[in-house]
Length: 113
Length: 116
Image (cartoon, rainbow over all chains, first blue to last red; front, top):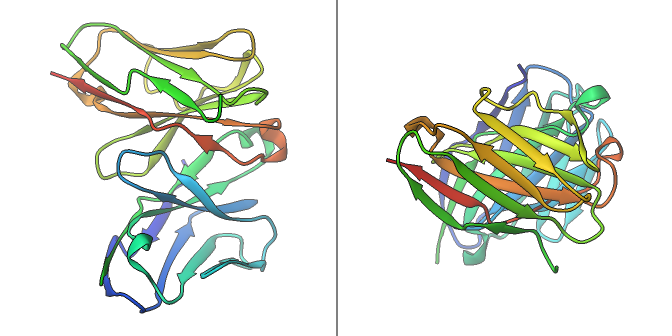
């Protein structure tokens, strides 16, 4: 089945630093999504990307949908303590799989004040 | 309700027992999804509903797992004869539009299942 490789697995950074994480897939996706999950809560959508090459920003977050449709990255600029959490990429293949998202393994982000 | 509501929030059961997990989606949302998240892992797709029908149940791990949805609202995920490997957080999500238009998923807080 489809698999997403997300890296890095974890990051320890100082407040104010920029962060970059990415996902690669063995197959094509029609939609790329980035979620953040805080402890004990469900994932919350940060950014959605619907077209190959699309670059989208949401405040300090920027994400891109790779041209090959097999990869995506998320950048966080000027990190703050509340950025701490687990970040997941997710892809949707479309066709008969529209209801199914495939998730990466997550990137655990720790921000030191 | 204001968000996706799941119950119970925590469930501890003995191996071999059956469990039922409930999901109340956001009012008016037509699509409902179940995912499983093992400790330290990403989310695994289990099944999704469009209305009361389940077009894709390919993620259900075995025939011990089943789900139903009634009245285009509440859904129940049932795990029969639980095994220790079933221990995980079971997350439910709903979306306003049909899954085919890629509506944004809103997740509940999950039901944490521990099988002893």
